Image (cartoon, rainbow, N blue to C red; front, side, top):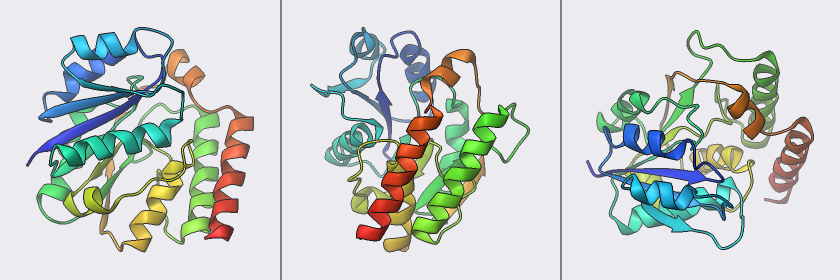
Length: 222
């Protein structure tokens, strides 16, 4: 399979190189979408061998992910792996994430950080539970880790995926896409590494509330 990794990145010059190098062990191409970083993220990504696309203005994780998926389509990708640029996801889990797609059992694979004994701060567990409940209310599909950026899209999902929401709410939109297109799903336990750095990069409580309101509003408008 022609497997392409898509990594949305914003101000990740200290982390992006290691993520790219690790991902190359499992994919043929790495696309980094630099979402108007103010640092040397794009330079470091290019030096590490990634295909780098740059947004002129900061557009959000959803918009950056869609830019990367569109580029992967142009490269005739059979599967697309998305993962965060801050190093919290372990690229060595890509092989396990790809397996349901390679075996023809799934069109989309969701990582599940809560499926094994990861050290996850309580605030993140509570935020994830809230995100799962909101996602279920908006889509009717329960996903154990709906807000995780680590996913694999198989051939059908790569062709059909459309992300319209630019911010963090795009994760719920992807679950909705899986329902609308009747994609077969799989959920795979993965490792996660939280640190003061990755905790600081995540959503604040206020941002989480804003994201939830956007999700619910969009669900009523569709």
